[in-house]
Image 1: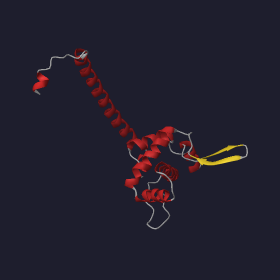
Image 2: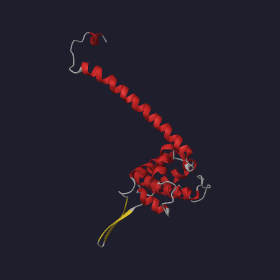
Image 3: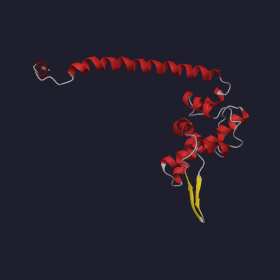
Image 4: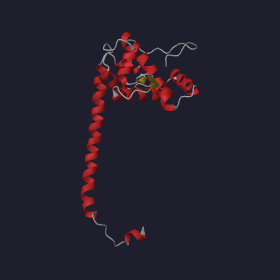
Length: 183
């Protein structure tokens, strides 16, 4: 501290930084306040939607994920099957073909990227919140899949359940112990 007080070297731009940094800090604080206000508004709009409770009853689906699902999927009536919804979200595997060669199935690079990310993050959150999802993930890992591949499988499985929940307009019901997991 004594050496700092005796320092005589002045770094160029110190005066400019003294005027710019407080303005940047104030601007950042204003942006954070706006973000918090928008988050509150999103929660209020979501609470008013009739499907909000249906979506948030699912472990791993919070306010942001439910809002993204409602924005991109709506009530799910545009998708006849869960496979259509998964393909729209980019969670359905794609077979690459060229002429007579078929190269197997790969993760899709197409689809709604925002919805895919929301479902992927929801599946990741469900690993801690839902023992059924965790068991499915662990089975996929035991089959030799890597972490991201197992999460995509889980997200696809959860997409099937999401489609059924939206069609029936029913809350999530954890399957009975010992039955086939619905993730």
